[in-house]
Amino acid sequence: MARQVALGGEFKKRGLLSGRSTPEQVVLWTGLGIAACVVLMGMDQFFFLFAGLVIAVLSVVITVPMNIHGGRSYAALKTETAYRAYRKHAGLGVYDPVHEQTALASVQEYRAAKKNKKKAVRPRGFAVRRAERRKEHVQPAPLMVGRLSVKEVDFNARERLAVFRHANSDPAFYTVIFEVRGSAGGVVEEDVEDIPHVGFGRVLARAARRTSAVSHIQSFTRSIPLDITDHVSWLADYVDPNAHGNLVRSYQELCLQVEDRAEQHRSYWVLRFDNRTALQRAANAQQPGPMAVHAAIVQEAQALMAQAVAHKAIRGYRAVDSQMAAGILAHLQDPYTYAIDDTDVGLEAVWQKLDQEQTSKAVVVNNHAYTRVAYIPRDGFMAGSALPVQAMRQLVSGIVPAVIHSVSWVNEVVDAKEARAQAMSDRTSDKAKRHSDASKGKISDGTEQVMSNSSDQRAVDLTPGSGHHGVKWGAYVSFTVDSEEKLLQVSTQIESVATDCGIDRLYWLDHRHDMALMAVLPMGRGIRT
Image (cartoon, rainbow, N blue to C red; front, side):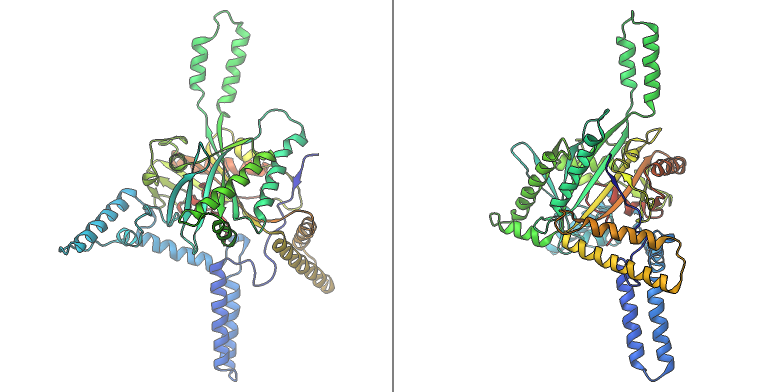
């Protein structure tokens, strides 16, 4: 029997104060702190007690994540609206690399003039401010990229590996990219078909150990419609003139049927090194020097990828160097200008013009490529039904007619001990809630039952000695078309295929597709914090 997995059931977080993102937690605890101060200021006066109670209740209510808002709170929605207005005022809704380079050049000229004690007019503007804050080794990049730098190192005797340093958080984290080859297609037995998925689970389990420096593994697939015109032309030129007419017509019909389905699929794994303690320990074990961290990253990546091949999670892989990474990133932004294997673009010019102001439904790249991004919310999978592990395959290769699209799945691995503690806490909370509702005679709509079943299953899966670990996930889908008129049509097309994958709904990230673009790039991002 084919392996199955249950992803539905986690509709919401348990408890009144849980389930919030970091900014929402800040708002909540700030509000509760203000409420406590107000109460302490006048504990013997009804007005102060009432005002403190109102502030506390409002702090809780406006920060409660709601499914109708895509898992975000009222405060988050209003913050996004205000931030959107600020971005428009500051010109952050459009990233123009030419403008950024001009601003950088003007800042460099001004600094050179001041160094030589010459008079110079200080340049102004938001782009200039960004250039002034940017370090010398950090190239201009869109807002969603942040402070990103690249170092290329030797991976083995034949290959080089690009190590990306993301300095948006403190301390920084690192990512590396590998192009992987999956299992061969065709008719296979169910048990054989499941082998790569079992192997991938073992890779995740290895990364989840506390001694591993890998904190996230992103599985990323790019699907590109394949033009079979060259093949048809070759066939017309080289077909045997004595071939039977029925044979020629049959092959012609096959070509016509395949034309809408023909695709090229490219798959990548991204390893994110954000386990600071383990990474520093591994770096200390290397030869001391500025490259110790990079040496530790290479060593861990070699071991993990070797295990992936040994467990048949993949058939093979190759390290992605700076040149390959530049081609991939440029193509993912503008597939109409750059091929995925483009070697003529460098990392200094990899970021394209991104415009979120033209339409709220997509980010417009270089004025002709429209990219729309959606994510699968935590309640997006059908609850109560187990899905085959191959379910997401439909989103990768089942869209007809074929469109340029990407599927990104980010896994943040969690050590078994930590995951088990969370599972037991959730299980206890669910049992208490069900017991309380039963004692009060409440009739549930089934939500509590589904969540209780989910926490029960997690607790069983994470039994000590099982070898299982926990994982937090984020899943994204994006597509690119060449005109705004096609956006809604292709969106409906993808939503229809998503239903076949057991996905109830997709949440389209309108008004912020330029920011969401980072989640559908092989950069190891996309997990909510």
